[in-house]
Amino acid sequence: MSQVKKDDTVKVHYTGKLASGEVFDSSLERDPMEFTVGSGQLIPGFENGIIDMKVNEKKTITIPSSEAYGEPRKELIQEVPKDRLPEEIKPEVGMGLVSKTPEGQEIQLVVKEVNDDNIVVDGNHPLAGQELTFEIEVVGIG
Image (cartoon, rainbow, N blue to C red; front, side, top):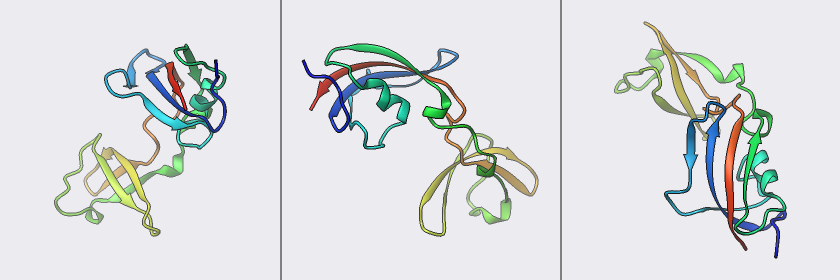
């Protein structure tokens, strides 16, 4: 029986949990996730964790933040004057915003603070700094 190796296209079902046990994502209620191992589509710890698994094999892996979304970076937290926001936007803590770099790349931001004249936005991935646990089942190797 074949085992997962680099460059294989695989289908997996997974449930991702935080250290607290809270589920942050799962494929169980939808189609399995399909990706090519080693293509960089997923966090390194997930891709490395399924190497050598067989079809129908189940496994639980714990991924340190360094192999997931990394540690939060201070330079991705910035204060922005409210007058730089479009007029129709009324910022609230927890609200998601999208900004564009001069090159046109979109950056997802989350509002962390709202002050009288400014807002504080965070461009870190919401799971940065977190250890993640995944329950994985390989359902296909292509």
